Image (cartoon, rainbow, N blue to C red; front, side, top):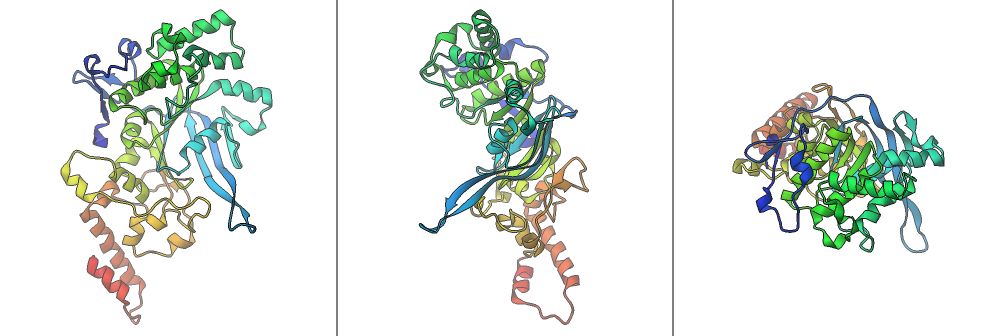
Length: 423
């Protein structure tokens, strides 16, 4: 599905899978951010502007210690799951984290919630650093922060009725008596489009989409203001994905919720988010408003991710970039730029030494002040650089620059001739 359309399609109630009930919440509410057109599409509305940060991460690192080496001579090593990430999430905003598996997205979300302590750096929520809070203050803070897990099947206890599982948060924070808690359970079930009478049923009696609604209801039970959504729709059918996304968008409008949205589906991110942060090997390589980053990406990794999105147009397939190899080990990341071992742009530029010796810092781009990029040679043409014409332009520019840099007396090596021949 083309990113520029920023649309998701879902089936009507007559074509919904037998295991999925119609959602009253999706069809009864008015004035939500995402409206449905007469053709049955769900179209994104204008993005909101950022306000004062609710969550702020400053140079956050999260390392895990492991033992490696040969037997009897083992030594402790650090897995750098998150390595120096700084970002902020404004109140009422949706910020997405995207990247390949192993890039540190989920770990960063857990550190933001305080579920895992940061090895270094600062995590500030509503102006207060989480590390400095007392035990009682942290318990009160957890009521304001919740998470929706990726797996709707594994995140629920199969031996407990769903009503009891939704009520657990209310019991932990000592909210209301038994009657008040039961009323709240019925309220949140109705809020996510499920029959309140289902509270006595067990998880195996529900479909995948219904289980994910139960997970959302469990997170909403304590009235949070910030929710980490850890790939909430990746395990669902496409028709059910749009229903869950609409539900989350409506709740954001009605409750003023703030989301940190973790996903690998760039179509969904472009449709649902205000800003996006692209992560690679524990670091953020590009960050900015989703329209600007997706329309004119400046980091070669972002370009490669967008190039891999399936497209309807046949002529776009021939220019798709395929990254070579796997993401390097976070125990021993490459020197300099961490993406250099797989970077298609570095190869086009003739493997400059700067990529090996100097690590690029995430800084505001001179071309787009709202976008930050960590690259020594940020792209000017965005996705156009993936086409044969765009790659040719990069080569020609590099050839001209290298001609000026090499003295006339210097002999021309074979490698230079081969690259020129390709150009």
